[in-house]
Length: 177
Image (tube, rainbow, N blue to C red; front, side, top):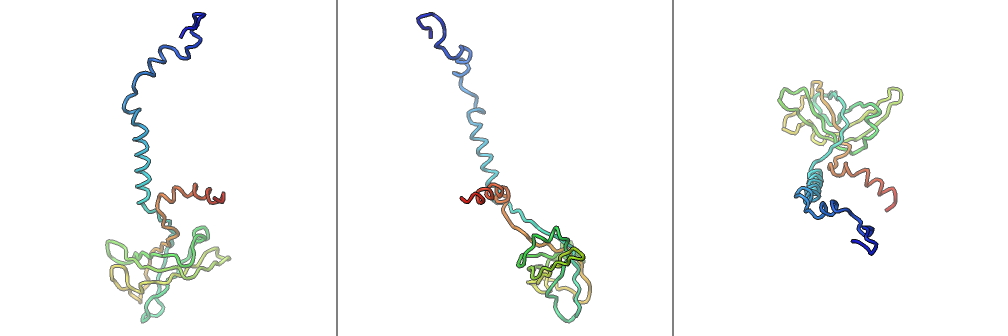
């Protein structure tokens, strides 16, 4: 665009720039945003279906004081940094390691009592069994011997999506919206 003075003041871009801008972009540039958006959406969909379970684990020894009675409660000791998240009523899974099977025998229960002993700096957790003396695959516990295992107390059972978006939702909730 030449004005009456004969210079190119009205032309904003050079001829090379106009030539580059007039070319059609390649397919990767045209569809790149769509492909990236689809990948992000598929990751969100996958993260919705994956569960993230937060556990607190501790070794446990099951001792029956009276061999004729069934075992109804199990006690475990935890350090103070692990036990602060535990609340009464949370689900507990006890994996017994003394059985001679290829997979662990499992007992299920709920946290019934939490006590803190300040002189030892440990928490005493009492778990009431929901399936008394019978494991999940039907074997009965021997009431006369000491049985070792691991207790896993389920703190949170969230979807991975919820765990990833928790910082954003906590900010949103604190602002009072």
